[in-house]
Length: 125
Image (cartoon, rainbow, N blue to C red):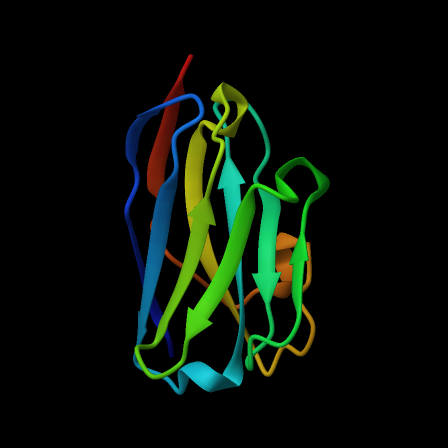
């Protein structure tokens, strides 16, 4: 079983950058497709970005394409989300998720096996 712990959230201004990290423990990190989801107040949790076990394939939701970059370091058991040009609408709790032997990234919540507790990102205008 994999435990996931996000970090890096905080209060930033519009246009700023922020990098989120998700550290995994308790499993073989390379066996997992990883993803970032987010949930804004009053809204459903939504897919943000995903990455295959090797990092060779990534997927993004349209609203973050060109601004966010997902990456992973399998030697450090960590997945990252680099967020640039942040907007107030990016304000949300950001969650890390893992899918065992997941292949290409999936965009639906039910297809992920493990979740972190989330880290709050607040973007002020």
